[in-house]
Length: 105
Figure 1: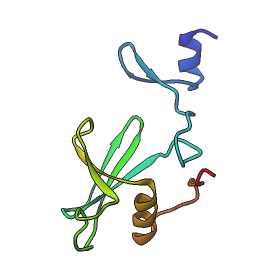
Figure 2: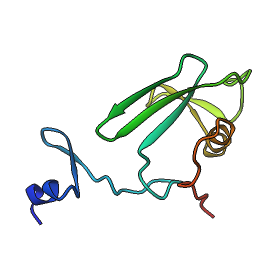
Figure 3: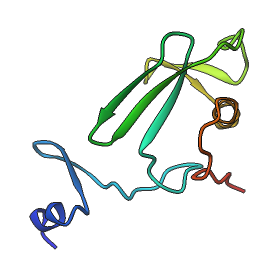
Figure 4: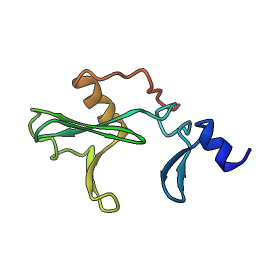
């Protein structure tokens, strides 16, 4: 199948000229590519829609959210990152859908 036909059949998507992505890719604990990525914040809530899905900022009132051993500063991403276990716990705490999550053995 040519690149043109793959785009037409929506097997791959285009991000920008010369940049494509495969929306059916799988990653980590999540068995499918999520359409919404959720980020916890002590600031305001917001939602940003992109060609790859949506980014959702969820406000939390938890105290000491960054003073924990299960959150670390990622230099490469320039953002605080939670361990998979903490992310799972936080998603459950704010009542988000956990259907796509399957912990590896």
